[in-house]
Figure (cartoon, rainbow, N blue to C red):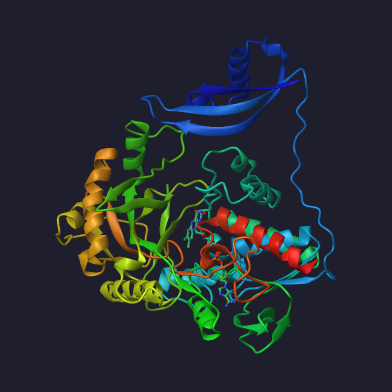
Amino acid sequence: MTKETEIVCPPEQHNDEATLKQLAASALNIPLKNINALKILKRSIDARGRKVLYRMQVRVFVQEELKPEVFTVNYPNVQFGRPVIIVGAGPAGLFAALQCVELGLKPVVIERGKDVKQRRRDLANINKQGLVNPESNYCFGEGGAGTYSDGKLYTRSTKRGDVNQVLKMFVAHGADEDILVDARPHIGTNKLPQIITAMRETVLNAGGEILFDTKVTELLVEFGKIKGVKTASGEKMTADAVILATGHSARDVFEMLHRQNILIEAKPFALGVRIEHPQEIIDRAQYHCDVRGPYLPPSYYSLVEQVDDRGVFSFCMCPGGIIAPCATEPDEIVVNGWSPSKRNNPYANSGTVVQINLEDIPGSDTDPFKMLNFQKEIERAAFVAGGGNLVAPAQRMVDFVQNRLSNDLPANSYLPGTKSIELKNVLPQRVNERLRKALPVFGKKMKGYYTNEAILVGVESRTSSPVKIPRDRETLQHPQVAGLFPCGEGAGYAGGIISAAIDGINCVLAAKKILS
Ligand code: FAD
């Protein structure tokens, strides 16, 4: 027989099976000797009180053996299946490919960037020399923006689909089983590339195709129906279903659609800065201690405040992380963050952004490029302010709020370098003023947060897509082009790895209906 219960223990005991069994025995009021095994179902850290605790929901095996779950994928050969063209090998594209195979369809994945291994060299050039390859960078290449990311695997929305299905697929391809139980699962930049490689192998072994260094430059459409795609080399590939999962940074894809008279729309997004603190400040605040104990992970935070009718919020928080240069063109600055699996860097960073709506920006709302052009303008201004080579404009936190140039900047994790400037010269006033008001309030919510030891690095501008590619709510097809499935973050239907993966799966389920 099995029973479920919650157990609570101090951090130093959370990995001690004997203690956990004892706690479960007393919670269920059964003899300890009757418990054969425990399976943790959910695990979280409760830091609300003075004492930090681990909370676990466990399944208790009473006089019954625990049979370990095996996570493998066993797929049919789809070499001769109906082809589905998937443009983009980010989380949306990769999970779409895996779902195709599961349904007996043949995925043909077309990716403009390089495979994960070759991509590394281009990332080194970005970090060490400030050189951006527009086809291979933190956003473009195998695994998309998700590969060299933090790999946080939680989503605010669970309505979109089966989060567990996605997590289990990560485990089947090498992720630690902890991601299935942790309240805030995380993989880490160092582990993601092997997992993405394993996913590629699953697709190829099943008879799917993946093409790197291949950019889609035209959609082939006849009488309102998709017929395939054309690539930069002029090659044409045919299929009755095309999943367009090109991410929020493929500006040329939005231009391609517009050129082909395929409807796209301007979309609100959020803009701001990346804020970095020494991790120990965040630990002290969250764990109410002088020094974080060895059994606790580097702590995170999530902050939000309504300022002048707009949300100002922290986003993509990376404990023990690094601020990454995520531009896709050589003359722009875009920052984001990542962390290794151990989260053992001495800094904590998060995007801290302000929502920007269509009415905030001058020009007609029917101009699909209105928000994208505004985003581009800010990124270029940041580049100019930094002085080139991806040096990012930056300011200390209190100096920023008090409108004062920082005399110097604290040591930080952004490798191409930072330059002290007044960020108000780069940020739009509506963003600047709301951030100035929000940061001291965040400081009241979290002790130690509001400090000149923290640095603001500009600009965090690729929080979500500034363009939406419309689609029918039921069929997920573009209203003007049957068989075209706008998918993932770039089209406006996802906001992270998990939601992009789920959207990829959903698009294939919808494609299957028109192909059978
Ligand atoms: P993308 O991942 O952007 O993939 C799109 C792919 O399409 C790219 O590989 C691109 O090269 C390809 N492509 C574009 N145009 C073409 C074309 N014309 N032809 C062929 N291929 C093309 N999210 C989280 O949930 N957790 C995190 O911890 C996290 N951390 C992040 C850290 C960083 C540094 C970055 C940059 C992002 C992070 N994100 C995180 C966001 C997450 O990575 C994205 O939400 C997710 O990758 C979106 O998936 P996608 O498949 O829709 O698009």
